[in-house]
Amino acid sequence: MPRRPSRPAPPQPAAPADKGQLHPRNRHQGRYDFPALIETSPELAAFVILNPYGKQSIDFADPAAVKVFNRALLKQFYGIEHWDIPADYLCPPIPGRADYLHYLADLLAAGNGGAIPRGTQVRALDIGVGANCIYPLLGHREYGWRFLGSDIAASAIASARAIVQANPGLAEAIELRQQTDAKHIFHGLLQADERFDLSLCNPPFHASANEAASGSKRKWRNLGKLDPKRKLPVLNFGGQAAELWCQGGEAAFVARLVRESAQHAQQVLWFSTLISKASNLPGVYSALKKAGALDVRTVEMAQGQKQSRFVAWTFLSAEQQQEWRQQRWK
Image (cartoon, rainbow, N blue to C red; front, side, top):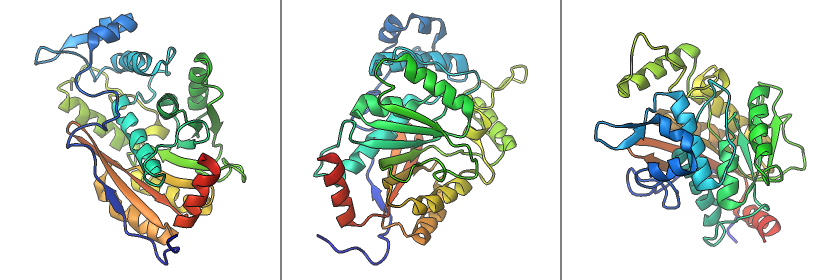
């Protein structure tokens, strides 16, 4: 076995799928089959439009259309019969969320002889599960993993719990827990004997409500939907304050995430977080080095013209990782 490294390994990038392409296992390749979606979810028909190329689509600037569209995708591709979120909560783009999970599965497989560990022996922690509960839903359906979803908003936890309870079989796989102290992420949430193979997070992107509103206007302008007579949502996919912004923005939130992860280094095999702004990466790497992370991975992802990435890190040595896998996955 290799010896424990004396200093953190440099961040290791992972090659994404072909440029602009979703992960090979992502179910959402190519154009959407709207007739098939409408057959399983007839309510979607009222929101289908023709785009400038004469192809069927929806108005992605309309939160109601996006919500119904997501409900149809979850039903057709993942067997989620009942899914809804309160008005003005974040309605996530499902293909991009699925990519994060597929690349995390690859990360686990890389240390497991190329085999993705599946089933309930794998447990993941979703930091900021939100009202939509999207990562636990997709992760359980794709890989059979168990999830703990946390959030600081009681209303988000209530919505996620309603989704779980409305779909038979999910309650045994998805636990939801409120973080009652907004100053902390892990502390006060995790029990001392709990272990997680993964943690994942989609951190607040903006640094203020005004910045979030400006981002909304830019998105609408890009979609050709900016209309001074039309009331703009906070963002075109909706979103509450805790989902969209925090003091210091993404950089400050992730710095806190890294600091706290070091205090729970033995409870999680691989910590991870999405990083929306590539300019934040140097600060993340610096924080991870200071925290003592032994292995850091940066995984690039792409969905058409949209580029994204996540950073994953562990505080466990190669020997400790191997022992972890043997105890939990075999």
